Image 1: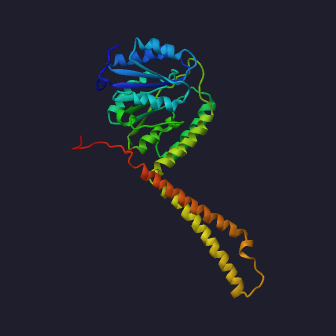
Image 2 (image 1 turned 45 degrees about the vertical axis):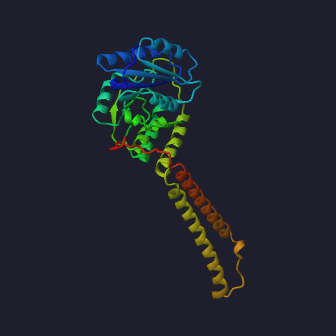
Image 3 (image 1 turned 135 degrees about the horizontal axis):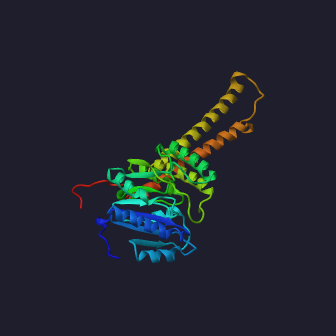
Length: 326
């Protein structure tokens, strides 16, 4: 197989897989047929996420006939790790991801490619008609609705494996855990806001069974909170911890003033000798706790700011263009 110059590669197709030995030959033949019929130069990056069947052997056999790059993990690290690794090895001007189970149709590739070339940073597939059990469709709808509300991105299917990306966007991505579900959110955070959606065909599973359980929605939701928090306060932790610390300290201080006022009022205004001592009141301990928590949050904010300043040499800002700089 001849090596292609990276500037001549139109499409990189990244496919994470786990125990998909039966579907791989049919999928690769289908992808090749579609790309060849449209005159695309392409590469297929297969990331074997620790398969325990003969998937890697099949990849080695297919590599002799198709423009395939194969990557094999020593164990199962998850889809995010597989995509992240695959993205690093892409050379195509447009990057397309799809699942290896034949539920995503390679016939969508030409239109996805066209939409990226028209100026979209990212095109996300929407499996409007799904061939999945209700145990997957109902949680998925809830998950997508919550993600739309939190992220502000109007997509119907964040978790669709069939997506297309501009090469510049792909090279800014760093995903782990279950964050592959939130690539549109990460893309928006990185400044790539031209995100579109395309209704795509969703096919019934032909071989094997699904590798994902309901726990993915729990982990995914936690990752969504993590992304939302980090993207907003990564460079300004004091804004978060300092605000909470101020509120907590202020609440505690006001309670202390109230306790002191009540005591002074009982002694000097009401001339009463029957009043509870300060330390005998539950409100005193609540105020003390609020003040301590406020100080701790302030310290957490200061420590966070120092860590940000200490790591400020690391350039994680995305530069679109430069002039007069070599």
